[in-house]
Image: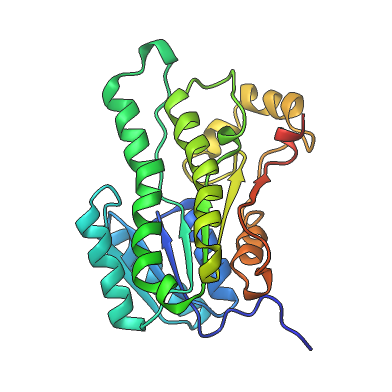
Amino acid sequence: MKTYFDLKGQVAIVTGCSAGLGVQMAKALANQGAAIVALARRKAKIDAVAKEIADEFGVKTLAIPCDITDTAAVESAVDEVLKTFGRIDILINNAGTGAVAPAEDITDEQFHNEMDIDLFGTFRVARAVAKKAMIPAKYGRIINIASMYGLVGNKIAGSAPYHAAKGGVVNMTRALAAEWGKYGITVNAICPGYFYTDLTRETLDSDFFQQNAKTMIPEERYGKEGELDTAAIFLASPASSYVTGVNLPVDGGYTAM
């Protein structure tokens, strides 16, 4: 029997792994046997996440505080992972932010910050992991978390810098896939729609957003916990070796309309 999605013996870094979708995807990979490296800025949060994953799934974990806007910190974090595990097989670039304001009121600082975290931050981590671990190993699975808003605009929450940064992630994914394919590295992106997390639940359950779901989303609802997991596992799998440069919407059909 072939186990297409077995990740035992593999090491996965997940950025933004202190809450929400990052933790959900880390647990999905741990469920398949991968060792998990949790990266985020808040040490107490990632220490707790790493312990929870180790206790629940019986895999090795490592928590490394890291600000992805700091190149030296990113390089140091990757070095620490290699010192501990000797390899990095999977990277999920999940860390991000989101400035919400009418485009005409967005400040230079907000726009720069968005680009530095969502776009350049994603590149910083991918660059370090590829150079230090994946290119030498001639193997890797990089999964960038973009957004359905990297593919389309929106009228309900002005967030032009977020759209610009995530649109950059979408095409950077293609660029890195084209460059690194010869090294056995696949680079893909997941473009989530709105998902329920502790931070979004109250907003998504509001009358306005519930009506928006019925109007704008073919499935007429928002994403539930766990509905991103299979996309992450599929793209992380050694069996998905001929899938690269893909931007996969997981949005209930939002971008189909």
